[in-house]
Length: 267
Image (cartoon, rainbow, N blue to C red):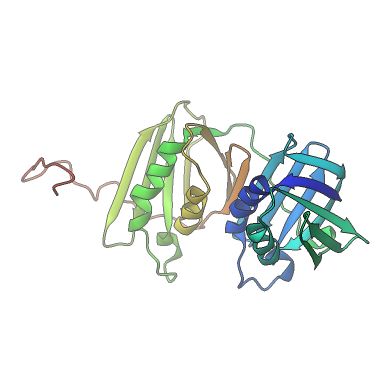
């Protein structure tokens, strides 16, 4: 494997996938970032078994591919090196299968890599019927509901956000049994199947950290025990929390003793 790539391009991809790295992981290989270099570009993958993030960097004028290949590089080391290098372009070369040389015009670093075959098999195949949501709307849903979820792992189901999708209606609920946050929106296309899933709040908060301010749509691909979110050149996979979420439909009353209308900033 051998490539030359613009530093900012690589650093952006590394920063995104590094959200899935955990220093507490007991599996050493999962502390690394998997590099898969093909004729079409560079695929970066990181996982901690709870979430998986994959970023694809298309081949452009900012990337020169000389030899294809795959290698796993310790995430902490490659991030530290790339961040501190002042050069505009970085060369990465793998020799003898496991020895990695990272060099520029003025610097050179040597690292020991991990064989690609040691990385766990992660299935990121997408479903045929995704649910489309505007990325800004999705980000606001998470910000407006996640604060009410619980941090108490003794009731795992309350540590997530409950997504209910029926037809063209998406309802999101979050509660720690003391407070409740709810957001209801209409999605663009009606879905044939009804969904009632719970996604860990902390995982969704990690996802919105890697979103930008674009108006691009994102895709939700829902499976029995996981969800994959496709956003631009990013695939984000999270486990689902098993169990039945409490029925919160009747907790917010329809009639009130008093209604007060105030300016938000003043309140």
